[in-house]
Image (cartoon, rainbow, N blue to C red; front, side):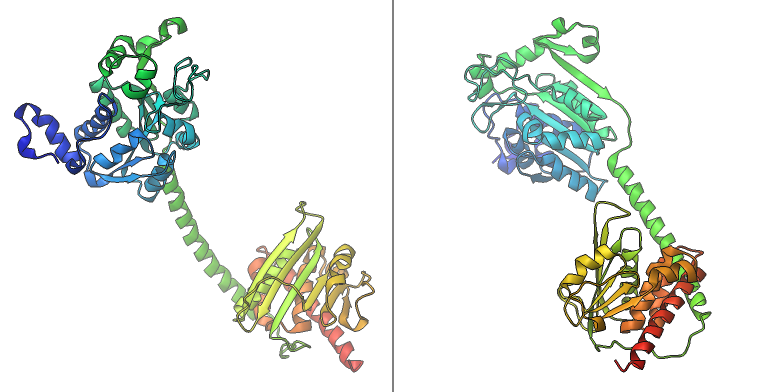
Length: 506
């Protein structure tokens, strides 16, 4: 426990930063003696202080590794996440509240190995996060394994004969993935690193600052880099500023540590664009609701103009409380739309309903099937297993689905089709649906509306008014008269069929 009274005047500036932005009860920190991570954590706190960020409006996110300890020491809204997932969690936080300053602190292995995919896509999206990488070129917490940034030829516990991989340049990797701000600092160049972190926080978009840390315990010892002081002196003596590096050859830059901004550009920030999308969708929703009100008024007006025969709806011959309908044909015949209209009518009539469909890889052509359940009581299982009604408009669909229906299933087919032998003649209703749409209505594409009217008339699925309204709700504007004519023709066809059945005493 650190006591404020124990702090000497010469260290007051540092102690003020500690007591303002850190959790003293967790100090002193447990990083190895000479580790650069403590310096980098202090740089983050100083950048926040210089910018005057609110502690309550700042979130620190870390993953797993030596670097992740920072989320426990820094006294902000903090979250210590799983290995490699710091950016994923940070993305969720930023999307939930775009006004927050979200700072990710991660290690080189955490961010560029298991978390590499999250890194490149956050950079690509340009989401407004600031990522500070404590890059010590090795997996320090788990025993000194070589990492994606371990230089070629250097040693680790999993590279006892030297690493043969090429190392990632994290700043350039992020830049290549689309990061609009990418920079590199070091544990030695404190003031520059603080400035780079500040620039990253101020930048509107994805920012990453790859900071060269030092790990004397594993990386330094295994690669004979000397003490922590020696490693910091190496950073001092081998640092090259980014502007100067542009004038140097690859040979001259070999073994050098390039510091400064690697890239800086302006692109639309993800959460800002996402917010605009939400606003647009709300506006479209309001417009859609207004249009739906106008459509319902139009539907009511058109429906009111329909001359109703005054006859009571035809009741289901089987008197069923639950109807399971399967409609089949080929793509392009409006099978799915017919199924949707039947379900919509059931909703308007206050019944329970469920609707589903399936079709082949072809959008138009190939076999198509749709199912609608309509019930007076809650449906429960929504899959049609034993259809009570089957309609087929093609021979292929009739051959396929007609063989699997039971003896109590009513089967409506186009009059040009031949029913399979397993169907009893009395359960099949043959009507010239396609021909009626072509010749009586004048448009073959209205065959599905003719079929809808036939189905409702044959089994009394809902009242006629609900079915007419459902038709009008799902057809293109300007085709009301055409489709209502198709509906009337369907009612006529099915009514004549029912009359013939009654005349035969069936």
